Image 1 (cartoon, rainbow, N blue to C red):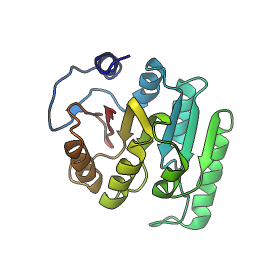
Image 2: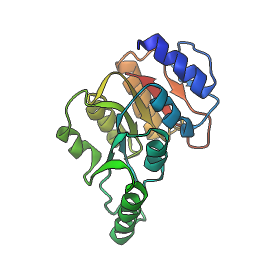
Image 3: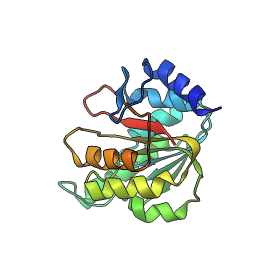
Length: 193
């Protein structure tokens, strides 16, 4: 399947029309459509970076029968979250994903990237560190892990935040001509690699 065919599926799943721009095209649907998109693209191997309680990972697994999903999260204390709470969230993620083929990697995302081959994944969904440096590092290191023609997606793209600044620098620096932004309170952006 070539890039134009993949874009056609994106338009169908997210209810949009194409155009090229230095800014993302806003699609009418939310991130709940990624499972359908990945299934229709016949993607069988993906990674979510920043898993928290495993709720989005579970939605992906439910939508894509037989998916091999790698779940990367340090589940370490940060901000107002204690280590005890993060351990509870790790247990919740394990429980939520127990019926599926999910592999847990309990490391910081940029430390875990070296554990995987370049081109190993059909898609990645980044929802980990939200500082400029963390997001930029994840994009640089993990985009290599996505096969050509796969999908790179990120959560929490707010026009005034560090995630947006890192993503905009990445897409400009890598000449990404066509990218998309979901229409929701905490939008995601994505593009064909």
